[in-house]
Image (cartoon, rainbow, N blue to C red; front, side, top):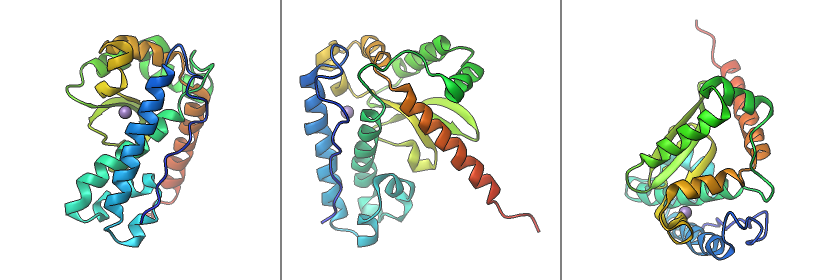
Length: 218
Ligand code: MN
């Protein structure tokens, strides 16, 4: 039996109030995220032990190695597990504000200003049709915002997610009465930009190392 487990939140369920309701957060974590972990383990239990041992991010990066008849289940539930884990680790009581350091600078250079970035984020989120997530990723040294459907992760195509927000209706229907704009506004008040900034610097470093290791042309 594969052994993925639900990660504990790094804060109490009520720690993000009033921006995230404790009961809604608990249901999202204990019911929805746990459901993905359980279903991922059930699928992996039928597969080669080498796949069962991979951390979920590696599993998604190697989705092509999953047998075809199990691939969409691994993509959906592995993505559900990885995406929610990343989201919980991107929030903090006392978060919010604007990013500083290298990430703050890159956002200013890419989008013009942090406020413009926030506006683009909201617009792109509002334009998603159906369920999915909005992602800030680093690809070829550039910051990019896009949405992906369902629980698809940028890891599936070898990209590095820096920040993602759950745009499934279950994430905001009860608390915000389906008002996505209010949900995104509440999100800005709890983003842990220190954590996202560290992820950005790690992604830049990994991309730099990849470049150095490219074989020289003959
Ligand atoms: Mn969710």
